[in-house]
Image (cartoon, rainbow, N blue to C red; front, side, top):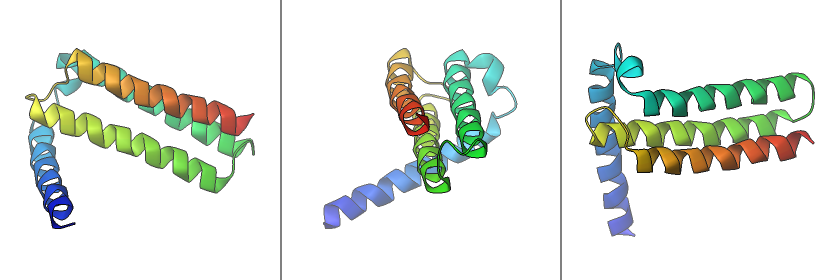
Length: 113
């Protein structure tokens, strides 16, 4: 239990450090890091799909909140990965993030139908 807490604290510290690094280069990351831009564009699209399905009554507010939470977790992972790689993500990291986004996309579809 103590080891898990230490790892959690270490992850939090690294993430916070990564956030500062990402903030410093926020103005240029999109044009210099197309893999990040692709991942984040998908997240924005999924968020719009969630909002659309919520507005149409296809999903409940709690379903929308859960789906958005999962998207936020992918975004946090993307930022963390970028903080470890000088502000960009690797192709393997993009692939893993896209797999997570594929799963969320399927959940949005299933919840709405």
